[in-house]
Image (cartoon, rainbow over all chains, first blue to last red; front, side, top):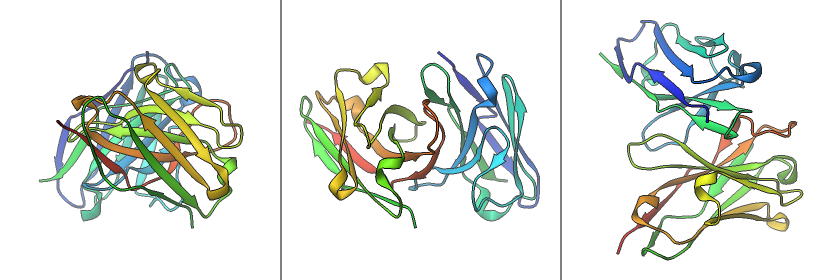
Length: 109
Length: 122
């Protein structure tokens, strides 16, 4: 089973700063099949990135994804107040078919 | 616009079953797989399985095999998830999610329902 480990568990930053979130897979991900989601309290997750680096429709360009193999990064450049939320990575195409990381909470410092 | 609207909150006793609906609009229902993901309070996301509305084919996470059933009614563009033999650990918010089309594997989820809280309590 592919296990995704996200770090840090909580990240405290101020608006305007740059956030770097990590997602590490226990096995190499085929074709970099990794997505990132943002979830705010009481809301469903929202797709940000798929294929490790492709932004979903309507996602601001301050969100970017990178990485390959087992190490992936979500970068948010110039944090806006609405960016403080929990972020999840998801692997797909593996076994089991899909799994999520445990999440990183991005909080206002 | 694409919308997935789920049924309301449920309270069930241990051992009972629950059936959650996911009514879709704004796209061709039979062209996109529907997945179900759950989230216990304060916890992460747990994938439960997928259903192809066109064929009715399904695939379930091993953890839920034998206890979950995913079905659909194409005449009303609605997907269903039924979970049986409920226990307290099944208390969670259950989400339906539309999967991007075009491959035989489970892919990423581009639209989600608002979630349905299922509480299992005696």
